[in-house]
Image (cartoon, rainbow, N blue to C red; front, side, top):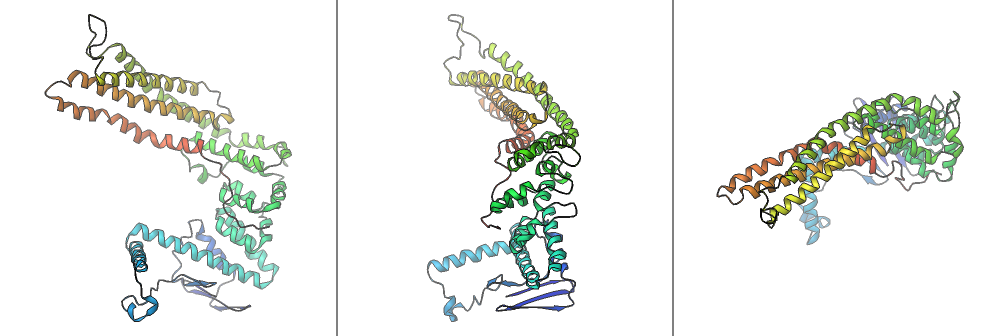
Length: 452
């Protein structure tokens, strides 16, 4: 088993023969440097741009760019490809060619390769520390490494360290918090999901408190870091995300922890209210501004389509009082689309008004307010689309029999500009609302590896 990494002027070599392991050094810095170097850039998906020439061979798994002598393959019986094997080889060469030449694919391939190399390097370092049988080495290297990995949200590194050193799952930082408590504070769901792999020890982790007497719910009640809040747009969606985290952690917490006071005599609900008071106010302002921006177009559409409904295109027949174009297919399309636009715009207006008159409690941001805004935006989009269809049908009824009917085509095409404008401007918000409101749970098992 061989592993070598060169970083600038440093080079580390690791050799193993059978059960004996030997670490040879040539201008090697202290042992913690490789771990710290690894964790330095791991939060950027192992963007190890400072690593050069990283050949790794661990447990007979080799990453190599050598493909043999393809031009003289006939001389080598092992490389002779026939039939479907040749086709598969050609397809593989084509894929590799694209991976090398296409910049975006090449970048993804390089990132994936560096990711695998970083994990194999980490495994070698863990094996080296474990072979020392020195508690001081564990304290100085592994404890700091796993705390840093949990803080940065690198669940692959955390999982690998815990598998090599199961006792590291109980390691605490300077504030008396383990990796699961740190994951809740930093809002790293991938790290917290490792709790599913703890078996019967899940309950022990849930019972643990930090140095300030805070349980898991107290930590979830704190405000998320700015870099996590900014992942979603809008204060209302940020508040919704915080509530989702609090509710998810609540499912793991013990029933008595819900009202358990910490060292400052605060329950988790009190901590959540204190930490999110400003965010609730900002979310209320954001919701009202968004609702007001939907009120005006909804009211205008209601007025226009109602007037179009009572003003029949082409007029009414004097003999029987029926519309002149009542038997024309375009007229039926006009009636249906106008009715759909009217009812959809009225629905949008009423839903938006219910948002403006809401009490804006903390719990309303979890589902009630976002769901109302989704309905309001969706029905507004439906009313605009139906209104444009009704307008196009009315134009066809009035000018469809004219010799210059071709003029209607660009006019009708221009009427769809509002639809595209609304879609391009408001669809990202509607998509974010739907994903944030109707998506599955935040937590879930992500690996079958068991630590205990």
